[in-house]
Amino acid sequence: MGLLDGRVAVITGAGSGIGRAAAEALAKEGAAVFATDIDEAGLQVTASNISAAGGKVETLIQDVTDEALWDKVMDQAEATLGSPTILVNNAGIAIGGAIPEFSLDDWKTQMAVNVDSVFLGTRAAIRKMQSSGGSIVNISSVAGLRGAAGLSAYCASKGAVRLFTKAAAVECARAGWPIRVNSVHPGIIDTPIWQKSIGRLSEGMPVIPDVPEGANALDADTLGAQASPMGRPGRPDEVADLIVYLASDKSSYINGQEHVVDGAMTAGG
Image (cartoon, rainbow, N blue to C red; front, side, top):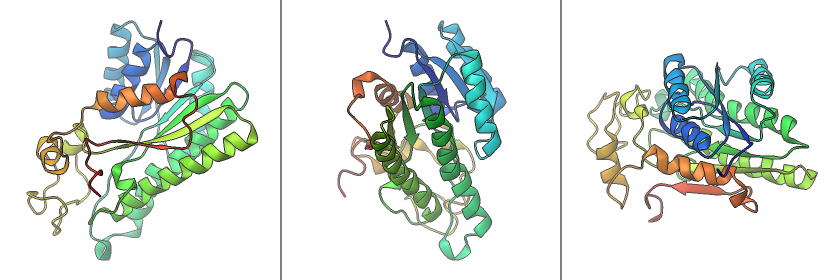
C-alpha cells in the first residue's frame, strides 16, 4: 500500500530535475501521474521511467503560461486517470541580470512562467477539488525567502509564489473547501538547470563566488559546497520526498506553510 493509492497527481515541469523526481516519487507511492512539460523528449523519459517501475502515467506538452490550456490539462487528467487530487506547480525558469540593464520583457517573462502559471494552475485545481478535496504544492525557492544580487526578478517571482500560496490556503480553508496549499523552497539542488543557460546570472556581477564573468552554466557541486553548511548540493529525490509528504494525508494539518530544503543554507540568516 502506498501513501497515495487512488490519488491523481498533476505535475508541471516533469521532464527533468525536481519535476521528474517528484513525478516518479508520487507514482511510487501509488498516485496516477499526469505529467506535463514543454520538453517533450524529457517528458517521455519521465513517463518511461514511471511505466517501467509499474506506475500509471499520462503526459501532455504544456506551456504553463497558456491560460486556456490549463482547462485542457485538468479535463484530460480527469478523463484519462480520474479526478485530480494533487497538483504540483513545479515549472519555472531563472533569468538573472543587474537591475539597471534588466529589460521589462525579461521581467515579464520571468513573472509569466514563475507566477502566472502558479496562479493559473492553482485556480484550475481549486475548481476541480472544491468538493473532492486535495493538496496543492507550489515550488518556490530559497530565493523567495531572501534577496540575492543579480536575481531580483527571480527573487520577486519566488517571493510571490510564497505569499500567493499562503493566501490561497487561507481562502480555501475559510471557504470550507478541503484543499491544502503549501510551498516548497529548495536551495542548491543538483539538477540540469545548472547546465542550461541561466539568463546572464554572472554577467559583470559577483553573484556567486568563483563563477567566471559571462559564464552561462554553473556547477552544482561547487555551489553546494560554498552555499550549504552541509557542504553539498541537495538531490532531487530529497525534495521529491517532501512533496510526497505534503501531497499525502500524513500532512493533513499542514497548510499555508513554507518548507525549506536547503541543507541549512538559510539557517544562518
